[in-house]
View 1 (cartoon, rainbow, N blue to C red):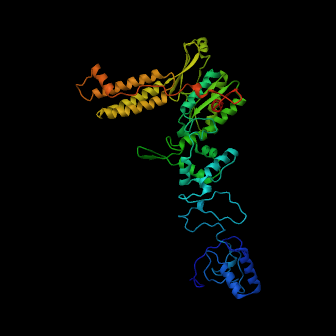
View 2 (cartoon, rainbow, N blue to C red):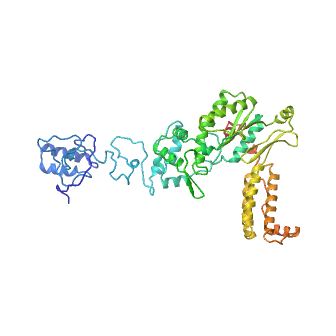
View 3 (cartoon, one colour):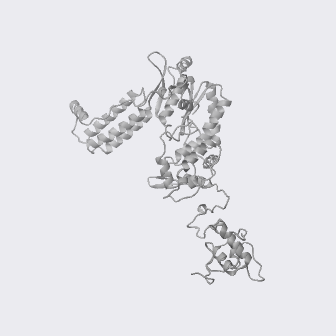
Length: 515
């Protein structure tokens, strides 16, 4: 039992005192009885009232004295732990940082809600047992983000809980988070083949000139200051911005050696693609949309996949003007176009006619996302776009596989067959577009020839005959090439509405408006 002699230390608030502030949990009848007891001057009633007014942290059994005679009383702070305790501010209401700063950070200190007061921050809960309000926080955030597109978020850091993030991940829909900027890359339903199909559909319309652009060392030269400013357009939570700064300064590990990053984002990091999309959304996408409305004379298309983008123009003058303006725009934000990989070329339906006028045999080609785009004609003599595996990508991949085969030549043929089958299936899954079968067949034949040659060189005297090679192919077959993806116009097909009229699909309008 504690008494007046128990001199436990107590922290006091600097706010003005509350003279007769009732303690939490007291009913109205108890408060009226306390007031009557004070007016009547009854000692027993005053004693019971004193016991009822004891709060957590008060000295047990300490008399609630009003002060010594002749001693001036301070405002909001007692001279002694047992003096003026009844007029102190409630320690459960006043925000205070604990003394152990190493254990409890400042960000985790939250005050309790006063009567008739609303706190904007989300209610905190343990990671193991999230409450119902916190469990539905992602739905509320998503709904609020759609309603108020220009509002800044100031309490996102409190939503970073293990249980909450795990639940949000398992409830993520396959068609969610497609983005609002129209760009492609590292998001559901915005993969590279969507970008390739959008580019093919744009070329089939009103494109006569292509601007092929490449940013020099984009991930290594990205400016941290501009990136943080772009993030703060929608995020006002300083703790979330601080976490992003830590991601940028975390560095990278290469061959077991840590390297510090003063600028740019770690290429291959988890958050790098997201930050790259945010950066180019403000630097490139919004600026191109504005430039197209103000300066362009014809139709302008923009297809961007992360830091790789291609622009299509109806007028050649617009393409030349855009290249000069784009160089100045990127220079203002610490970026630079690659001088050798950035060019303007004739491409599209009128490219063959323009080449004959200029004295060239055929239109130029360009590479985008591992495919070489070529202007050809179909059987009826009309314009057709052909997409073929880039020779540079194909040669680099075969060279890498050849070295791997030499290193593992003494492994069992069955294990080598399983590994090569996985490699070929992945190759077909990406390059299996209509019109690219011959390139995939060439890749298959070259890789099979490399494999047979490596197996024969395991022995100095082993030389296979044609019959032995056929028997080995039947015993250890490799998957044949096949077309996996549909034609580009099938993803942009017309849909018939309920009134019977044809209209362009929602995905087609979003993909061809310049994104």
